[in-house]
Image 1 (cartoon, rainbow, N blue to C red):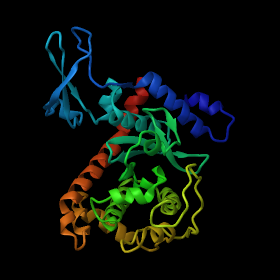
Image 2: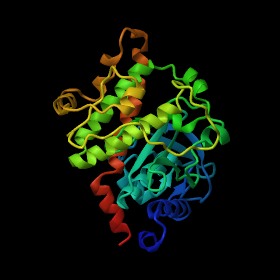
Image 3: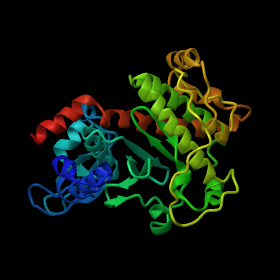
Image 4: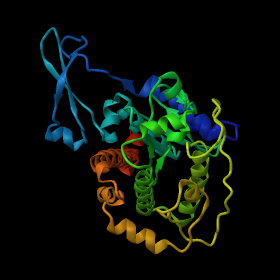
Length: 346
């Protein structure tokens, strides 16, 4: 695929490569499995409950184990839901959770910036950085769809609420990319105050960037793209009077200028989403570094809730879910798994 993409005369080779990758991944590489077939009888099995992962299954980060029963021989089969992509590229089977992790790994192997997107309606997909549109766009490897973000709301009739995108060095609330009904979605976002969610995601985003090991130049580039994306998402959010259309609009440049002399950027927790999108903060390197070293990930959650003790249990659940996919996302981007995938196709 990479060789063919290099021959492509189009100026948007990366986008065309992703489209080819989607087709190959869905039709040849990965397989959708609702339940395993019985190895003795060769027939489909029926779901029979759940079990805890064994020590061997935990090595490959199995979050849960589904049990299936063969109606002919009565054997019980185990179907671990692995989160370790090194194991998943061996099994090459699963459902949307397994699919998006392996697809992210494939993109990473081809040097394509990729995110894993978690939705609270129990669905996950990916986003890749488009060369043509100059922003992250929706990709669903399970459905072989490219840049059709409204499919969940309009085709699948999902009642979206929280949609969080995560990569090796980013954590972003991208909910407003996937809807033309932002005010309706806002009525369903009741787990925690919006201010708390903004603060928590901003904290994770800053820490992810500090832990990424990227060069200062690359960090500045990513943060410039983030500010443009934040402004674009803010314009589609219920916090503005922007008029929505069913057609997915292209990104528009935010009214900002990047100060090339600035060595780093930070996010003030007192700022609104619009302010964070358009205002660079200079001379904040020590603040970012100290924060990332002293605040454990999960412990960020509760201190950020102000005068709303009733939200604590929900905040813990939400924080755990985001952090869980954050670490799974990091695993799907790791060097060892990338090398394993490359060696499979040498």
